[in-house]
Amino acid sequence: MKLIVGLGNPGKQYENTRHNIGYMVLDAYAKAHQISFQKEKFQGIYAEFWHQEEKVILLKPLTFMNLSGEAVRRYMDFFHIALEDILIINDDLDLEIGTFKLKPSGSSGGHNGLKNIELHLHSNQYKRLKIGISNNKKMDTKDYVLGTFTTEEKEILSPVLKQSISILDDFLSMDFDLVMNKYNRKHTG
Image 1 (cartoon, helix red, strand yellow):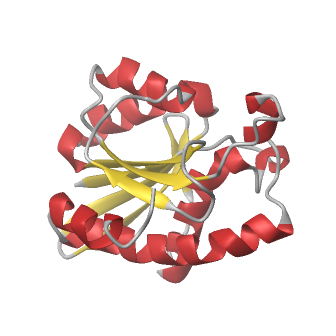
Image 2 (tube, rainbow, N blue to C red):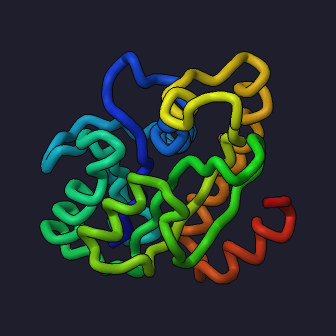
Protein backbone atom coordinates (compact mmCIF):
# COMPACT_ATOMS: atom_id res chain seq x y z
CA MET A 1 0.00 0.00 0.00
CA LYS A 2 1.20 3.50 -0.84
CA LEU A 3 0.41 6.78 0.92
CA ILE A 4 0.81 10.09 -0.92
CA VAL A 5 0.41 13.11 1.35
CA GLY A 6 -0.11 16.63 0.10
CA LEU A 7 0.68 19.19 2.79
CA GLY A 8 -1.47 22.26 3.28
CA ASN A 9 -3.95 24.00 5.54
CA PRO A 10 -7.68 23.26 5.49
CA GLY A 11 -10.28 25.95 4.86
CA LYS A 12 -11.34 28.36 2.12
CA GLN A 13 -9.04 31.10 3.40
CA TYR A 14 -5.99 28.95 2.59
CA GLU A 15 -6.97 27.87 -0.93
CA ASN A 16 -4.41 28.90 -3.56
CA THR A 17 -1.85 29.88 -0.93
CA ARG A 18 1.80 28.98 -1.42
CA HIS A 19 1.77 26.69 1.63
CA ASN A 20 -1.04 24.65 0.06
CA ILE A 21 0.84 23.48 -3.01
CA GLY A 22 0.71 19.91 -1.67
CA TYR A 23 -3.10 20.03 -1.68
CA MET A 24 -3.01 21.54 -5.17
CA VAL A 25 -0.86 18.70 -6.53
CA LEU A 26 -3.22 16.08 -5.08
CA ASP A 27 -6.23 17.91 -6.48
CA ALA A 28 -4.62 18.00 -9.95
CA TYR A 29 -3.82 14.28 -9.73
CA ALA A 30 -7.31 13.38 -8.50
CA LYS A 31 -8.95 15.44 -11.25
CA ALA A 32 -6.79 13.85 -13.96
CA HIS A 33 -7.73 10.34 -12.76
CA GLN A 34 -11.35 11.07 -11.77
CA ILE A 35 -10.67 10.30 -8.11
CA SER A 36 -12.60 12.12 -5.40
CA PHE A 37 -11.74 12.94 -1.82
CA GLN A 38 -14.87 11.67 -0.09
CA LYS A 39 -13.60 10.02 3.06
CA GLU A 40 -12.55 11.62 6.32
CA LYS A 41 -10.72 9.92 9.15
CA PHE A 42 -7.98 10.65 11.65
CA GLN A 43 -7.87 14.39 10.98
CA GLY A 44 -7.51 13.96 7.26
CA ILE A 45 -9.56 13.87 4.09
CA TYR A 46 -8.55 11.09 1.75
CA ALA A 47 -9.21 9.15 -1.41
CA GLU A 48 -8.52 5.48 -2.05
CA PHE A 49 -7.92 3.77 -5.36
CA TRP A 50 -6.11 0.81 -6.84
CA HIS A 51 -3.04 1.08 -9.03
CA GLN A 52 -1.67 -2.12 -10.57
CA GLU A 53 -3.19 -4.28 -7.82
CA GLU A 54 -1.86 -2.04 -5.03
CA LYS A 55 -4.06 0.14 -2.86
CA VAL A 56 -3.14 3.83 -2.81
CA ILE A 57 -4.29 6.54 -0.41
CA LEU A 58 -4.11 10.24 -1.25
CA LEU A 59 -4.18 12.22 1.99
CA LYS A 60 -4.74 15.88 2.76
CA PRO A 61 -4.16 16.33 6.52
CA LEU A 62 -6.72 18.58 8.21
CA THR A 63 -4.44 19.18 11.20
CA PHE A 64 -3.00 22.38 9.72
CA MET A 65 0.53 22.41 8.35
CA ASN A 66 2.46 22.52 11.62
CA LEU A 67 0.77 19.36 12.94
CA SER A 68 0.83 17.30 9.71
CA GLY A 69 2.77 14.48 11.35
CA GLU A 70 -0.16 13.58 13.60
CA ALA A 71 -2.38 12.65 10.66
CA VAL A 72 0.43 10.94 8.72
CA ARG A 73 1.32 8.74 11.71
CA ARG A 74 -2.30 7.72 12.30
CA TYR A 75 -2.78 6.72 8.65
CA MET A 76 0.48 4.76 8.66
CA ASP A 77 -0.53 2.88 11.80
CA PHE A 78 -4.16 2.21 10.84
CA PHE A 79 -3.46 1.12 7.26
CA HIS A 80 -0.11 -0.59 8.08
CA ILE A 81 1.87 1.53 5.62
CA ALA A 82 5.64 1.22 5.64
CA LEU A 83 7.83 4.32 5.79
CA GLU A 84 9.34 3.49 2.39
CA ASP A 85 5.86 3.58 0.81
CA ILE A 86 5.15 7.20 1.70
CA LEU A 87 5.60 10.29 -0.48
CA ILE A 88 5.18 13.75 1.07
CA ILE A 89 4.47 16.73 -1.22
CA ASN A 90 5.45 20.09 0.22
CA ASP A 91 6.24 23.68 -0.70
CA ASP A 92 9.90 24.76 -0.70
CA LEU A 93 11.05 28.35 -0.29
CA ASP A 94 14.56 27.50 -1.46
CA LEU A 95 13.42 26.35 -4.92
CA GLU A 96 12.39 28.81 -7.58
CA ILE A 97 8.73 28.86 -8.49
CA GLY A 98 8.14 26.53 -11.41
CA THR A 99 10.76 24.03 -10.24
CA PHE A 100 10.61 20.89 -8.14
CA LYS A 101 12.91 18.29 -6.65
CA LEU A 102 12.39 14.68 -5.67
CA LYS A 103 14.35 13.54 -2.63
CA PRO A 104 14.59 10.13 -0.96
CA SER A 105 15.07 11.65 2.52
CA GLY A 106 16.68 14.61 4.26
CA SER A 107 16.23 17.33 6.81
CA SER A 108 13.13 19.48 7.20
CA GLY A 109 15.03 22.51 5.92
CA GLY A 110 13.12 24.59 8.48
CA HIS A 111 9.70 23.55 7.08
CA ASN A 112 7.38 23.20 10.10
CA GLY A 113 5.16 20.57 8.46
CA LEU A 114 8.18 18.38 7.72
CA LYS A 115 9.56 18.95 11.24
CA ASN A 116 6.30 17.65 12.69
CA ILE A 117 6.29 14.64 10.36
CA GLU A 118 9.84 13.79 11.45
CA LEU A 119 8.79 14.13 15.09
CA HIS A 120 5.88 11.70 14.68
CA LEU A 121 7.65 9.24 12.37
CA HIS A 122 10.91 9.35 14.39
CA SER A 123 12.68 9.54 11.06
CA ASN A 124 13.51 11.79 8.15
CA GLN A 125 13.84 8.80 5.81
CA TYR A 126 10.69 9.40 3.79
CA LYS A 127 10.39 10.40 0.16
CA ARG A 128 9.44 13.94 -0.85
CA LEU A 129 8.32 15.92 -3.82
CA LYS A 130 9.35 19.49 -3.07
CA ILE A 131 7.61 22.15 -5.16
CA GLY A 132 9.36 25.50 -5.45
CA ILE A 133 7.47 28.60 -4.34
CA SER A 134 10.49 30.97 -4.34
CA ASN A 135 11.09 33.28 -1.41
CA ASN A 136 10.26 36.95 -1.07
CA LYS A 137 12.82 38.16 1.45
CA LYS A 138 11.00 41.51 1.65
CA MET A 139 8.07 39.81 3.40
CA ASP A 140 7.76 37.95 6.67
CA THR A 141 8.02 34.24 5.80
CA LYS A 142 4.68 33.38 7.44
CA ASP A 143 2.89 36.11 5.49
CA TYR A 144 4.57 35.00 2.28
CA VAL A 145 3.75 31.27 2.51
CA LEU A 146 0.17 32.05 3.56
CA GLY A 147 -0.20 34.53 0.69
CA THR A 148 -2.05 33.56 -2.46
CA PHE A 149 -0.35 32.88 -5.76
CA THR A 150 -0.46 35.73 -8.24
CA THR A 151 -1.88 35.16 -11.72
CA GLU A 152 1.66 35.14 -13.10
CA GLU A 153 2.80 32.59 -10.48
CA LYS A 154 -0.17 30.34 -11.31
CA GLU A 155 0.87 30.39 -14.98
CA ILE A 156 4.43 29.45 -14.02
CA LEU A 157 3.14 26.64 -11.78
CA SER A 158 0.72 25.20 -14.31
CA PRO A 159 3.32 22.99 -16.10
CA VAL A 160 4.63 21.76 -12.71
CA LEU A 161 1.14 20.73 -11.64
CA LYS A 162 0.69 18.88 -14.95
CA GLN A 163 4.08 17.18 -14.62
CA SER A 164 3.32 16.22 -11.02
CA ILE A 165 0.59 13.91 -12.36
CA SER A 166 3.23 11.92 -14.27
CA ILE A 167 5.58 12.01 -11.30
CA LEU A 168 2.94 10.49 -9.01
CA ASP A 169 2.03 7.86 -11.61
CA ASP A 170 5.70 6.92 -11.87
CA PHE A 171 6.09 6.89 -8.07
CA LEU A 172 3.37 4.24 -8.02
CA SER A 173 4.91 2.20 -10.84
CA MET A 174 8.69 2.53 -10.63
CA ASP A 175 11.60 2.33 -8.22
CA PHE A 176 12.03 5.77 -6.62
CA ASP A 177 15.66 6.09 -7.75
CA LEU A 178 14.46 5.73 -11.34
CA VAL A 179 11.76 8.35 -10.76
CA MET A 180 14.35 10.77 -9.35
CA ASN A 181 16.70 10.12 -12.26
CA LYS A 182 13.90 10.64 -14.77
CA TYR A 183 12.65 13.95 -13.37
CA ASN A 184 15.43 15.61 -11.34
CA ARG A 185 17.93 15.74 -14.17
CA LYS A 186 15.42 17.49 -16.42
CA HIS A 187 14.81 20.16 -13.85
CA THR A 188 16.88 22.77 -12.11
CA GLY A 189 16.68 23.10 -8.37
